[in-house]
Every structure is written in structure tokens, then in C-alpha cells.
Image (tube, rainbow over the protein chains, first blue to last red):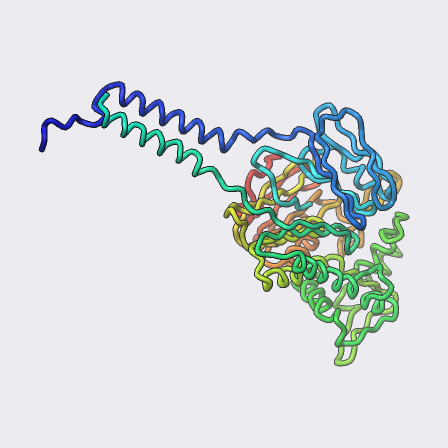
Length: 132
Length: 333
């Protein structure tokens, strides 16, 4: 063995630098995987199942209710102070959608009016469907 | 620090940075997603590549086909013909669905009974004008017009329905259509898909990123999540509840699922969720179990090793033994 070859990473500062790099890398990796998980912000997607169907996105930042027009007439979507959403009124006959009340996770569905209101949950826990 | 050490440190830094960026999950190709108003509800299909719009259209066409023969409301359907005339040719397209209805009537000891349409009609579920029939009226309906084994007969030539009886196949038609649509997508080579018929769900195949399908069970009390089902295997999940189809009489709500002994709407549960290997099974069994009192239902699902989640009307949550391997993050109350 050649005694003139210096040992690798033998110096105290080399190990400290390596450990610091490792920590930074792990933090960056974790950041990439979890940085976008922000919970429910009131954002929702509204689909109107007419011919042709329509799709609208609302950020949830608006304070005022919005009125959309479905198959049987208007429906009003409202945001609460806690960012939950509901269908406040609908021109459908049964009002099941209105009776569903406030939500921040399950979709609100009005079959007669052809309106689906889907909360957009950005927490990495988005589900593919809801059985109900 | 020697030059050699510096070079190695640079290589290590480059490797670590590469690791960070190369291990980022690649965005999965987006699925085709479409919802349509069909069968008096909203049907959605989520299909991952390889799949084409035409294949998804073909899957939706199966719902149209089933609706055209099994709809209670369409005058031209074969079911309407049977309800109206009391007879239907034995080779009708509806035959397999009627046979499934008969089979689940027997399997569930009469708790799944498509002839309860006669009762639902008397309560005004179809007209939307709710009423409470008198005891004598209920007794007469149960005696003469309900009980599928009594009111529906089949010979070589035709099905015959007892006079005045009505059948409503809504409790299995959706599951049956899901099975047909799933076959279309599976045979077309679709990589993975989810079919959602008003909350009756079938998942099949896999997502491009390999992640599990995640199905939430809705908590009707707060629209939150009662439990979660995560799976990479094909399965059907169906929920029966008292909160979407009901009548209101004198300020009290009555659900549409009936007790086969009393003929009265049951109120044991807010929801019952069943997981099965076939959509029709999940569909029929969730309805049947919802109609059973808890002292029967809990044992019934255990005896059959069914994955079931109950939310009783008093707010108690009950999970069957088989359900423990499917349902996670179950609320405690």
C-alpha cells in the first residue's frame, strides 16, 4: 500500500460538510413531496351536466355567492366564513342538494339540475371517489 | 482539503442533488374523466391510458342500454312493459337482471326485494307526494303485491307479474350496468378505471403512478369522511343511506328502504357500506343489510364474511370483522 495517498474524508470538516449536505438534501426532498399540501381553501370545481357540459373553477377567495345555471334553472353556491361551501338554493324540485348542507370534502350533487360541486382539497389526500 | 477530496466532495454533492430531483414523482398522465346524467343520477367514469374517448363512450352506452330496458320511469322499457301488462317474453333482454333480482331475494332472506316498489308507490316515493299508508293497506300490499317469490313467475315463454304488483330494479340496475361498462373498458385494454354510479363504485386496474385507489365513505352527518378505502385490487363498494331519497310527512323524514315484515321504512341506520367483488353484489347487499335490524345485520354480515361499515341512526359506528382489512381511518363516533 502506498503510504503517500491521503486518506479520504479523514478531516473533521469533511464529515461536517457531508452531514450538512445530507441534511439539506433530505430537507429538499421532503419539501418537494409535502410543500403543496395546503388543505381545503374553499376552491371548488363546478360541473354543469348540460349539452355540452360546462366546467367552472372558483378559487374560494370570493366573499359573494355565485349563481350558476343548470338544467332546470339557477342555483346559488355560497362560501361560509370557515371556507366551507354549500348550495344555498336551487331550482330543482326536491332540494336534496340544499339539504346536504355545508361541506369541505364531499361533493354536492343536484341530479335534477345537473350540477356537481366538488371541493378541491390540496392536501395530498385527494380521494378518487366518494361512496354515499 | 486536497484536490482529490474536493473532487470527491463535488461528486457527492452532485449525486445528492441529482437524487433530490430524480426521485421527484413524475406527474402521471391525466385520466379521461366524464360525467353524464343517466339513469336518474350522475354517472362518472375516470379512465387512465391507454384509453380513448370512443372507448369511454362505449362504456357509457352500456348504461344507456341497461336504462332503456330496466328503467322504472321510461314508458318504453321492458320493465315498464312488465309492470304495465303483467307479462314479458322469457327471452327479453331484461331476463338476466330479473334472474339476479330473484337470486338476491333468496340470498338475503327476502330483505332485497324489488317488489317493494308497490310499497314505495303507496308511500308516494314516485309521485313525490309523501303519505303514510294505513295498517290495513300495508298488510294488503305485503300479502298480495310484495315478495318476489310470490309475485313473479317464469315459465318457458314468459315472466308473469301478479296483478297490481310493481317491480323497481333500481337497486341492482346500476351495479349491473357498471359490470357491463367495466367489461367494455377492460376488454379495450384500459390501464385502470373507476366507475361511479351515484356513489356505487367499481375500481379496476391500476393508476399510472402505481398509487392506490382512494375511496372515501361519506359521513352524512357533516359531509366529511366516515372512513377510507384504499385498494390496488379490483373491488366494488356501495352505500345505502336514508339521506338522499326520502319523503317528508308531518315534518318527519322517511327513507325509501322497507322492512319486509312491517312494510314500513326502516330507520336503523344512517348509512351502510358494503365492499364486494362484484358491483351487483355490493349494490344489492347494501340495500338488503340496510333493511335488517342491527341484531340480525351484524351477525348476517359476519356469517358471510362481508366487509361492512354501519353508521347507526344513533351515531354508533360498527365495522364487521372482514371490514377491518378494507376500511381505514374509521371515525370512532
